[in-house]
Amino acid sequence: MPKPLYQHLTAPQFVEQLDARSPSELRAMRAECEQVEAAISFARRALHGRLDIVHAELRRRVEGAANPRLDDLVAQLPTILAETQPTGVTGSQRVLLTPEPSVVQEELMGVVDAVAGPEALTHLSRLDDDALGATVGELSGLEQELSTARRQLHHQIDVLQAELTARYERGELSVETLLA
Image (cartoon, rainbow, N blue to C red; front, side, top):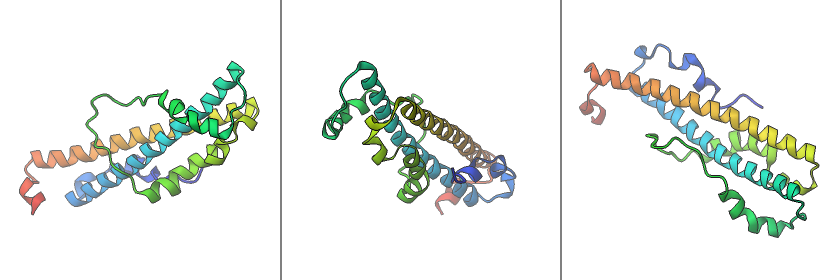
């Protein structure tokens, strides 16, 4: 996989020496982390949908059902995709952002598509069991990587927010200067 777009944001040095940064720099850093986190969240949701489709093919094989025609598979998608509900943090205080389409498509969805793109998903029944298992493994590995990156970005956002909050509490910043 190419160098992830979030690698520099999750590095420990990204949040070092924050006291030397201006409030506008801190806000820009936080906004960049939030935008990339939103892009990763979007890609993870798409990846989960693809995992659900691959798992449905695995279930079909275990149950011994006939290979579905493409139009039958498309008709089953609402059921397949509704079977797994997202497992987010209940009561999360995070605001959901809409990521920049170029970031999602070019960087993250390209990686997801390389593992199980739309073309591959339409031909899952042609894969042997080993290849299908490998696809599940690759998608699961990518999901773990993206989950780890999201957690790291949440940490960075929290560190940046804590620095801004501390400056307000120390009287170094005021709401009036923010609005001016």
